[in-house]
Image (tube, rainbow, N blue to C red; front, side, top):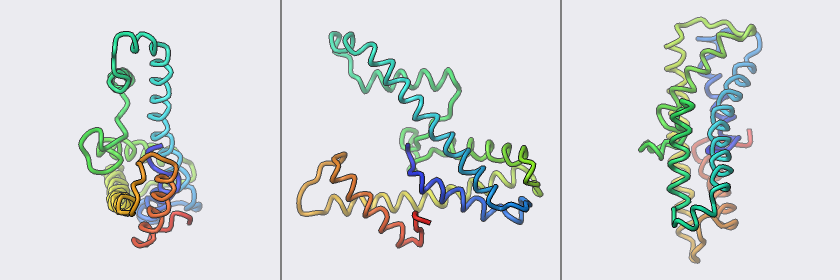
Length: 195
């Protein structure tokens, strides 16, 4: 998944903090967090499922691609783009669309619309403000956290790269070091992913 589950949980908590009690009234404040987390995870996992589907599709054509000298990465990109267009899915990865953050601006907006719709459907919540006002607050909350996350990720990557020995990105050691430095950097911003 593009974002760690701990970060998704943090985003959901921050969204809930910004919306309750001023914009959404509820006797169960935890429910706002749960709804936000469910929607965000569902949206992120939709593209993961699509990626798995494309990989399975390309596995069927592996021999043909090998014989014809067709690049797997190029075919993956094309097949995924075709399925995204057919299914009208909003691309998740911001870096694919030129955004600096991991989630594209379009995806954040799409999630905000879906969150407002879920909040309105819930019998445990009462929406007190205009839907667009709530949606804009969700976008702000998500953007703030993702901007911080981008700085943290960049700092963690830089720490791994500056080690005396060269550790190839994608290796198990690189992943472990990045995860450790990522957690340390998040704490510098006052964000503990464990909570």
